[in-house]
Image (tube, rainbow, N blue to C red; front, side, top):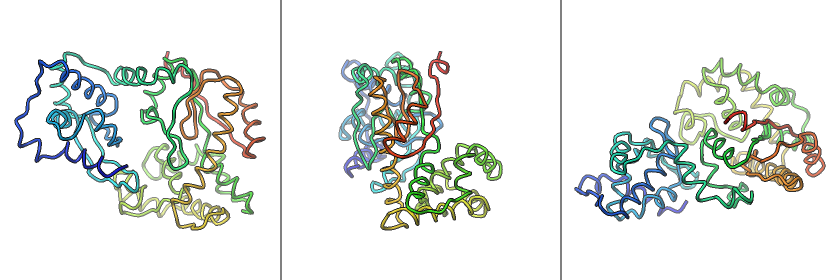
Length: 356
């Protein structure tokens, strides 16, 4: 992210600007009301009152307007509260925000409407990407061996509803994707079988629940921690550790992770796995991430070719996708194995059953 984008948001947030001005927008100007409504809809679609979230600085600046204008500063003050000033351009970490409840209520009284999160999302994304939904030809931007689309930034439940209303009835994910592909690739390069890693891949739900009970967190949080460890994340009580940052800088949890016997044994197997894989610097999380992404891209390209061959409109997201028709899983597994050599399995959610 370009540094000037962070400067834009810093200007929008700055007390120097907001406290010194007694600015009140001209609510009789239709252009001002239009801008306010656009920013309000965007904020409601992408932020919550309690759950903080990172978001593209570029997107905020684009929707709220240029930082130099009084209206943009006013919108930022009314709509958002910055809850975490920490950001790193190099690491791709943005500041975190929540909605400003009092400002939201004030703006609702001005524009005369109240919009739910789902309605706000649909107003923005169905209008902006109508042709892509219709054709199934979504336009992605490639970054660091992954393909990104703005819709990917939405929460899972909101995406389910959005896609279902556009006729995409099924959601699929490759199960335990990172450990599965990396382990199979390491075996190709001479790694001796690692029973504990193999067992985690095969019985991940059981192990995640057991660890969740021991660590006092959820199975979903355990999954994120294990995936981070497999990807080369450090376990420490500083901001260089993504596990520490993503778990509210909880030093007690970090110490539990360090002392857990199962996690220690799993990390030893993961270390052996990485020693077998062909990367230059095994201490580099960046190189480890690049290795995994290259495997993920291979498999996803194979899956996309299968979806296109079967005329199944789709939207891909990292190691998963949404599509119009239910797939023949056996034929998909066969296609992927023939084209990449990897053995995968997928999880399936029927959006019709979930959303109707």
